Image 1 (cartoon, helix red, strand yellow):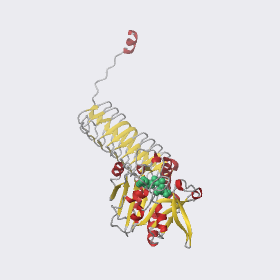
Image 2: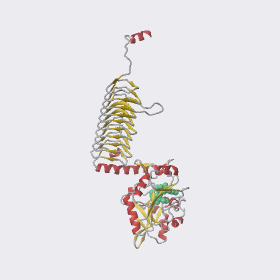
Image 3: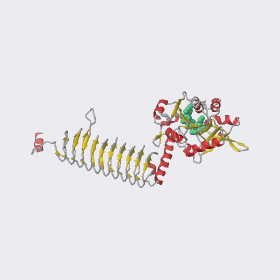
Image 4: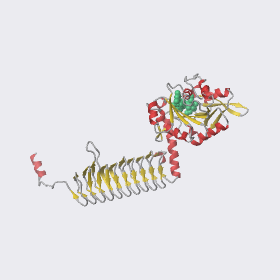
Length: 462
Ligand code: UD1
Ligand code: CA
């Protein structure tokens, strides 16, 4: 079947009071337009055209990762009908069905979209409108139906600002999502006038134009009105995000994850979590994060684009980004793992420890106050409190290698590039500038000197 998708995203989004394009504001961690594009991709359309205008460059740049998009620029932005018209040359010669989506309606399900296509084609309609019955229709276009012998057919759509008091009572709303037959579509859209309160070219006016021509206009009414919630303000942004979060949390709980307080669990859509993992209140799990089974993630933890194995304990207030953590590892409290930190099985990372681009080998421990950057640390290594890998010489980042079974005493500085050999010891307070051979003890501090009576002498002199 010939399906073409157009996504409208040129509007200013005045009600957001934002310098940024409205459709780039994030719903549950992901720009709202990406939710729309992901759903549209489910239709396997022949083309997907995004109408951009306000903040066009930023929007195009943000969508670079999406394959197969065509962008058209609408400048100035004179309304939704005008926006659709800008796609005419991109769609010239195409036939079949055009699915029109709004970049600010992110919750539409793939199922509803397929329903729309099916209903539109089987009814041989010129246009099909997705509608919903809602308790609070304020702000939406209302569906005005007129009686015909075949029932209460849609006659036209009236915007809130242009509606009479009686029309404002109508609870059936326009989602802003439509299917159109491409045959004659652009000529019909061109005939839309801007005779309304906003002096804009309104796409919903096409319904009345088609009905007057005796063409078939169908409706598909969604059973869950949340699906077609539009986002025009920050309050609506928060409300829609909440819906996405709740859905995700419900799926996770159904799959065996304990969420102690779903109201404060922020789990992005792309995150996976194994059964019997427990999320304490106030955790953020973001991006492409995967968490294994039987883990426990304590309050105040933020994990971004990271992979955790099974039975991992993450204690309070850790920040973990772009890291890999194997099975049976304990992390935190107050640890910072970032940029390819790679913690192997049974290792332990304690409080106030930062790992950057560092492998911490199997069963190794860094329990207190350490910076381990650009280091390759073997198995069963002990890193004492206050250890610092001095990885940066002002020009280059250098590597520290600490081999299996080594013991690094507290308050040591390892000036990279440097290697601590297998089983070697570094005495507390040592500054390591040269490699330590396997099995050796390295100490750099001078002999301690005690000056008897020094304190009393000093006080006397005052
Ligand atoms: C629109 C519909 C309304 C419907 C509601 C559903 C119109 C006139 N009204 O109202 O019936 O109930 O959506 O959410 O269509 N856009 C452009 N170029 C423009 C204007 C808008 O690309 O010149 C884009 C916006 O970026 C947005 C979408 O079209 O993604 C809808 O525009 P918006 O101004 O939000 O329309 P609503 O007032 O919400
Ligand atoms: Ca809108």
